[in-house]
Length: 473
Image 1 (tube, rainbow, N blue to C red):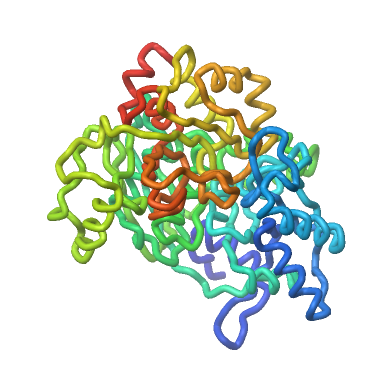
Image 2: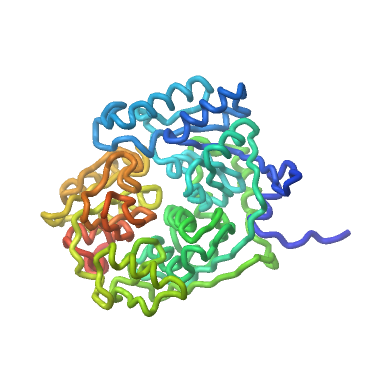
C-alpha cells in the first residue's frame, strides 16, 4: 500500500473541502461559513433576488454592520446620514433571506474579522468566505479564509462553494525571542518590510516558528490579518493548545462530547514534517525593536531608532515610489522618525482592537495624559470586546488619559464611517494600511502597535514606547 504524500496544513483543509473541478481548471471549494457587511450586502442580495435565486445555506451565512456605521456612543441609523440607506437595506435583506445580522443594537455587533472568531463561528480546519480583503485574519485559528468580491459572493451564497484556482503555498518562519514592548504588529511590519508588498503575491501563507508560537492567539490574528499587505491570498497558522483554550466555551464552538471529538481532529491540523511548500522564507525577529511606517504602504516601515531611509537604499524599481512617499509624508531622508509631531491617535480596526490590544495600550496610558494637541480615540473591535474592557476598567483608563471611548465599528481604518482626519494632519494608527488619503485627504498615516500609538498620544510625537513601559507589566 502506497504511503500518503506529506501534506501542508493548507492542503489538508483544501482537499477536505473540494467539491469538484470545473472545465476552466478552477476548483469548487465548499465554504463552512459566509460573512458579508453592509457595504456589499444590499447590492448582493438585490442581485440574487433579480435572478430569482435563493441562498443555499442561510443558516451558514452571517452579516455585520461595521464599515460605514458611526461609532460615537449613542449612535443609531441616522447618526451618519450617508450610511442610513445601506444600514436599513442590509437589515431588511437579512430579514428577508433569514440571515443572522449583527445589527447596530446587537450586543455582539462588531467588525466581521473580530466577531467571527470570538463567537466560535470559525473553527480550526474550517473554510470561511468574507467580503473583505482581510478575511485571512481568522487563519490564526487554523482556518482557511478567502476574501471575495460582490460577484463572487453571489456565487458563494447561492451554491455554498467558491470557485478558486489552487493557490501556491509559502511557509513564513518567524523566529527569535521578542523583547518587552515588541508585539505581533512589530513582527509583521518587519516581515512586510523585508519581503515587500508582493512578497507573498497570490499565495496561502503558513506562519510558523518560535516567534509565532510565543505570540498570544489575539496577536496571531494581527499576523494573519496583515499578510494581506504582502499580497497573500490567505494566511493561517497551525492551531495549538493556546488556540484550543481560546476557543473553549465560545458560543458557537462544540461542547461536551462534540468538543472532545473536534479537539482530537484539530490536533491533526499541522503540516507534515516532510511537507513541501512552493516557497520558504525565514525572518529573524531577535533584537527587533518597535516598528513604525514612514511611507505610504506597509512595507515602508523601520525600527523606531532608525532614520527615515535614503531613496538610494530603495529596492530596485521602487525608487520613484519611495520618492513619492517621502514627498506625501513630508519627511526628510536621514532624519529620525522619532520626534515627529502627531495630531491624532487611533486605536482600532480588525488588526488591533481586541482585548489584549486594548490592555497593551492601557498599560502605557495608566496615570498619564494625552498631549493637548492630539485628538485620540479608541474603537473596540466588537461590542463584546467593549464590554470585556469595561469589566476590567480599561474604559476608565482611556477616558482618564484623554481618549474618546467609542462603540464598535471600522471607524478611522478606512474612513468609511465618516471618521476621517483633516487634510495635512499626521496620525498614529493601529490599522493595516497607510495608503495616500486612506484616513482622509492628504492625511499622513503612520502604522504601529497599540502600545506605540498610546505612547505617541502621550508624548504628542512618535516615540519609543519601551521607556514608558519600564516597571509596568
